[in-house]
Length: 144
Image 1 (cartoon, rainbow, N blue to C red):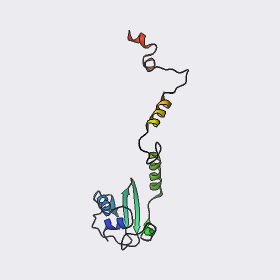
Image 2 (image 1 turned 135 degrees about the vertical axis):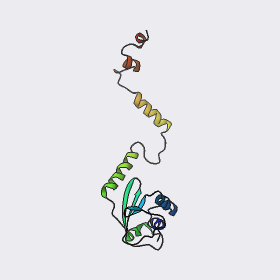
Image 3 (image 1 turned 180 degrees about the horizontal axis):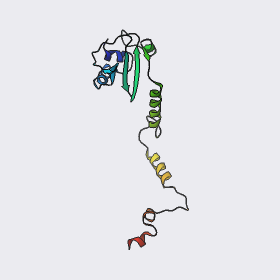
Image 4 (image 1 turned 45 degrees about the vertical axis):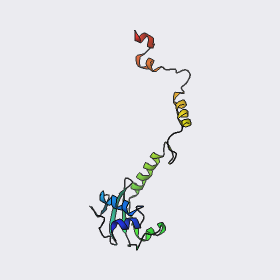
């Protein structure tokens, strides 16, 4: 079976054309050499795939006849990806969701106002004017 079709069949890519595009960009290799979409996959081969900024390593156990369900994927491949790669992926996902949860979109007008209030609120005894901060003293005296 062709490697682009294989990657699509085991659900690593949503479409076969996406798999072929990633192969063209040299993000898929067997052994240490990048492959072409027409490369035939055999049982026992180790495939390295760079996806989502991490390096997945899988071993082909069997070749499926057609696209398989998600629960059946472990029958056809073994995952040999290093644990630190998954930790790196988890860390990157957590960094992205720090400010906003996925799907919340841009800040609303209410969010912007609350943020503006939070930033502008300062203790009553610390009424620092930026001109005073940079120029020291009364801004009217510095203009003379």
